[in-house]
Amino acid sequence: MDLVVGSNFNNKATKISKKAHGNTLNDAPAELYKLVDRKTGKIKKIGETTHGERRHGRNRQRRYPEKYLDEQGLRYKPIKIGTKKICMIDRINL
Image (cartoon, rainbow, N blue to C red; front, side, top):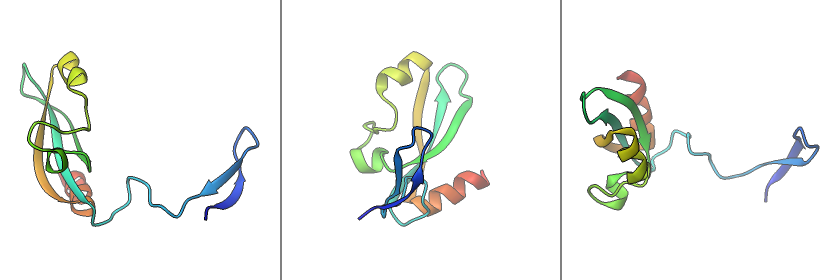
């Protein structure tokens, strides 16, 4: 059951869910990745996701649609597979 803890700017009741949000340091399987510019090879972003190639298969990550990557001229490249906690800590330390 969710707990009501106040109201937002629309005066609607807000809730606290018992489920953890996506940035929680936990042991869920995750993947550290980088987005690389296809022309220059420069790293444009480093991040972590639970919807990477580990979960969906090689070249089938679900974090970024292929259309978006093509339009932006980017390539998705996994760096490391681990837990959400390990990937988040490693991302900070890169």
